[in-house]
Length: 273
Ligand code: C2E
Ligand code: MG
Ligand code: MG
Ligand code: MG
Image (cartoon, rainbow, N blue to C red; front, side, top):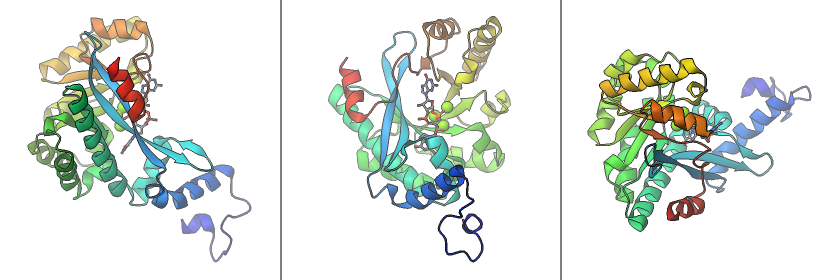
């Protein structure tokens, strides 16, 4: 960022830069090489059927181990990757990792687990996305319905008509689509009819234990079912939440109560029981 560097300054960091600004700049400069330096890793959070608690899939979540800062949250570096035009390359890499992992795990354990991959707003608009998805599936030999892309409502409403067209093209590949973080934005049920999504992911901000929310979650789940969507609850942390979701007939769930995002090795251990 030219501004952050200051006009005509040869100094890398301005002396008056805040710690946050320095961190941001350091991360911006380091991100382009993070992939080749092997600092990025994909971890997998198990997703289970709520009735049986049996695994039905996993969400791929990106991690960056920065040599100086340690683990950097995707909430911090995904926006940088988007701004700096690196999200396509990183996203394609995540897709390949996730598809390969799903294929391997399904072969080894005789399962048909579905892997879900988060797609950012800019990735969704990229003309390369469909090709990257097709390549990742083919390279891994993974059946298309074992891949799900998670898209947020905010990414869709940037351009409703354009998004609907992109989603239809993605659906033609045979993959599944989910609406991520439902409940944090407009949460418009009318969108669910406009976009060809298969799964509704309820944000964990929905999941508190007061009475009102229980009734509300139940109504929402019923509505989603009427629209032909499966409902997945995110961020289940307590038995009480699990109970509420069970009563609300929510289909699937994930959260620390069941399992944290796990490394490849730990995930296999989790499956083995
Ligand atoms: P998300 O897609 O909503 O993912 C769920 C987040 O909730 C993850 O945070 C996960 O670790 C966390 N989580 C899971 N269970 C619990 C729980 O029981 N309690 C709490 N408090 N948190 C829980 P994470 O891994 O830090 O990722 C944050 C966000 O970064 C994700 O939100 C997703 O939007 C984005 N992200 C992660 N990986 C990727 C990626 O490969 N590509 C893109 N474009 N975005 C990604
Ligand atoms: Mg997600
Ligand atoms: Mg997401
Ligand atoms: Mg989410």
